[in-house]
Image (cartoon, rainbow over all chains, first blue to last red; front, side):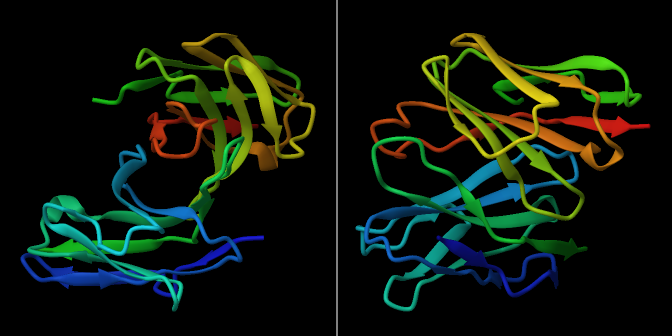
Length: 116
Length: 116
């Protein structure tokens, strides 16, 4: 079974700072996907960024980038130039890359607060 | 604006009531999901529908009954719920998931359910 661990229950930084959220996972799979989802207080879960395990290049989406270390099973999210709107719960998630029904396995989440 | 629409946004019901949650998407996605999310916890998968057929049931109690009448609609029928069923219920959809999880899941805003 796959497990996803987010070791930082809460984090807080000042606006415009850079913040890194950590995520580790455990799996025996070789092909899989990793995701970071953001859930603001408004509740909607929004995909921030995703990474295919077979790609060595780290994914980036504007101010968001990941540091994917496959051997270490680590998948951290870096937010540059943080903004007040980045305040949210962030979930790291894992999914097998196989045909057929697959589950998203979520970590416990990190509550990020951006202070003005 | 969310592309997955859930109604109602809030629902309060007694333990003897029968009610339904509704989810709708018009993105042409052929996989739809129900998740349950307790406060400050990650979403937990309940059901997955693929091409209008139930493909995953995560051992959910029978008081929750899913239905997928067509490719755009997903319902969750509720009957004789317990207080511990109070939670945020999230619907999600994705495209071509059965050929591999290349497409991310898009989530709705959720229905906040309270059982009296």
